[in-house]
Amino acid sequence: MQERLEDEGSGQPQTTTSSASDKLFADAAREESNSKSQPKKSARLTLLENEHENWDGEEKIQDAVLRMLVDKYKPLRSWATEPLLPSIKNHKPWHTQFKAPEHANVSIKQAYLPPLSAQPSAKPAPGADRLRRKEKEEKKRNEHAGRLVKARESTLDYRLGIRGSGHGSGMQVNPASLKGWTSLVEDKIEKARKAGLFNNIKGRGKPLVLAMEESNPFIAREEFLMNRIVQRNGAAPPWVEVQGELDTAVTTFREMHRQAWIRRVVRVITTTTPPALLHTFTLGDMRAFRDLEWEQRERSYHEVALEQLNALVRKYNGLAPYAVRRPYYTLSVEMEKLFDGCADEILRQLSERALGV
Image 1 (cartoon, rainbow, N blue to C red):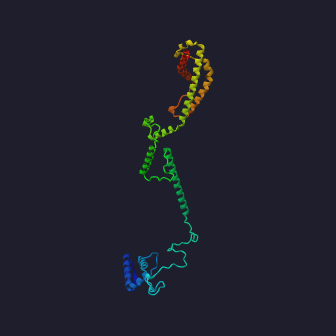
Image 2 (cartoon, rainbow, N blue to C red):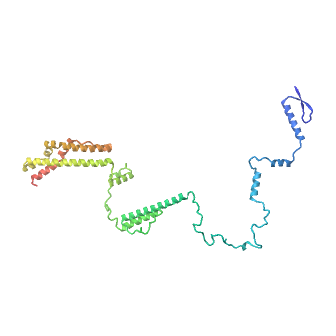
Image 3 (cartoon, rainbow, N blue to C red):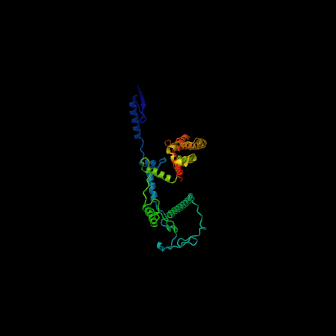
């Protein structure tokens, strides 16, 4: 199948095939013939078109370089030959003399400034007040610290018995290094030694009293020192304080019970036995001696006293660790301890009465 094509340039009909490659070759030949037939643009016209292109928002590097050169090297003025200020003919710069203006009140040369009231008040900076307050607080803090240091030094001198240390003339300046502090401490110790303040120290010339806890490897050194400070100042845990109260109550109860039983036994034996036979009693007799009437009469008192002791034991066991808790007190156990512990004293008093002492 064939088509008749008319060439645009020549206007002559041509017969070509309908293949794609032939059509592409035909189009290329037609464009080449058109480019040869059209007149070429001059280089000047092309340059002008490039110079007057529309601005796309970005500055070209050529324009930027040109602008920087123009800014750095200004073109000369056309009126550069004219003087900027009116001058005198044949006047040279070294002929110029300074003359203060007559209308000015301020003269830096004569060191004269107008009074502060005449000067316009400038507005303080936004943070000036806060900075001023901060400076005042810092100054006050430094003064307070200086007074504390002075009071501490005065107190130390008073304890050491040092008089006239020079604090009245002004605050002593603290050393700025560790060596200075060491020298200051050594000076104070030397002054105290010369004054004889170390001659009456408690324990002077005696061996140190070492505590058992000091050699205990399971107690840290700082814990031992803290416990010693607490012990020396009389402080103790709550359960230790209750323990002391309980020990005092038990000792008081047993001592009163002991004195009452000794008086009772001595009175009964001396009233029922002749003085010549008092020396016949033995220690076993005193331990086996019983007075049911006295026990029955004093039972109510003993029960009340033991109830109070057991209340303290109950309070102590609630605070103390498990390993140091105590059992409750019973009347029968206390009576057996009483009979056994008072036999020596009863026998001694009966011997004195037998001898008539």
